[in-house]
Length: 295
Image (cartoon, rainbow, N blue to C red; front, top):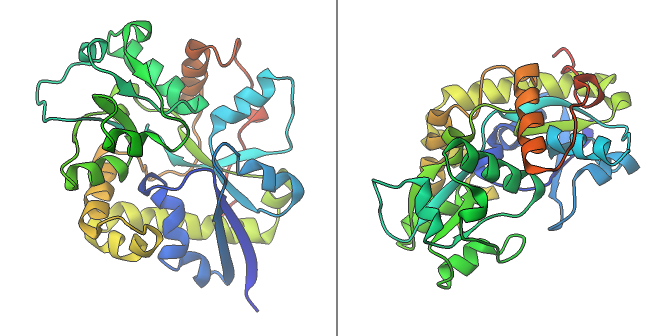
């Protein structure tokens, strides 16, 4: 009899393909799991389900563990495997601009995702690219609404995860001019989280084995083949757009062969969050991160 496993995404995009591939590619099913996945309501965290036991694995980010510690909380949650070691957002303009520079954001409004981490990463990218964030014309249409607002004519630029920007290009609405993966640099951007108790179970070991296989497959497999497996989870997205998005993430190196959240990647997030004012000091790696179960 198949073992139930519940996975919840805080956000759902091609950026999280290492986790999507675990069930889209049949890797979890091969380990004997009956997979259920859900997406959190806007503004809510998938971590909530870990606390009440309704979720086994949550897609989230180690940075949110830092915010919890900053608030004096000690959640019974550990981030045990990375999904992305680079930012997955892009800047899309209304017209092609092969000579785009970040200081152009002083003159044209950019709709920026104001979630804690996406905004912190954007501020860090501005810092690294020599732009004073306060001098940029930054707007926001609200959680999950920037794509529609840009399509409706608001803003000169928009800050979105793939495949949103690629779909804008496909529809003739925008043109990608920059990647935040390059601007931010390596960091522990997104990760898998679970309770320490669950991480000791056989299910956790089996899950991690499937995750390692799915990640290796994703890195080595042509984007067109991956897109065919994942397309049904992206209603309204053109298959070619999904293919191109996956290919870009493969090229950018978002999905590294190792699954561990490394100390350098964690330290980079600490610097980014402190720069954004989300935290005021450094926290212990072990208070946020656990090593992945053997699998």
